Length: 220
Image (cartoon, rainbow, N blue to C red; front, top):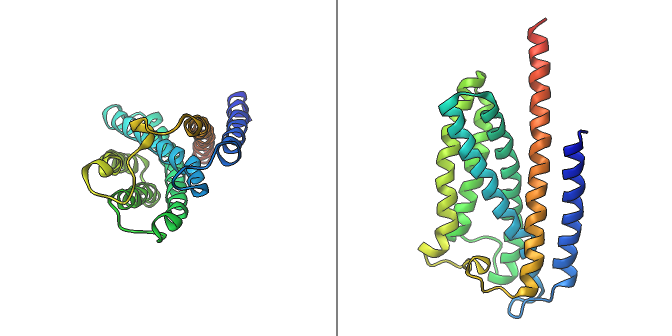
């Protein structure tokens, strides 16, 4: 493994351990929700990291459509894969949080529905790339999906402001979260972002190896 990968891997591991210890052990329970609120230290960083991943998909998809450079397409593909993983974590942890808070694992709330659609859009993005054999065509089609999916991300994030929903507004964005809860949340967010960077570099390395093997096979 290259030095960057080792550095990111070790950094991500250390930050995840530190952040989870701060959130699950050190931080006090929420005054209203009690211990169940601790799922926030996974739930919130996972969706914010997914937003980061899909923003990278947007930028790289535009770059690929404009420039036609495979590097843009490769980066968009890798970031979408990692973003789907973090969105799945968001849905899973949200269900765990929702059951004791709302009494149900799932409800067709605007924020929840938007997140589920977001997951399906980028899952479809990945499936599209696997069914279209021509890589250039697959890249162009996927780029369009990646750009359109970004608008669902905006809808999902703003749903709690635009609609009456069960999902609470962002305490972090509004600055209403207590300092004792905010610091562990920031550490976990940093941990997830570094973890995203680690996964992204590993996926890009695998893509480069796959292309090298394909080129060798084609070369006879």
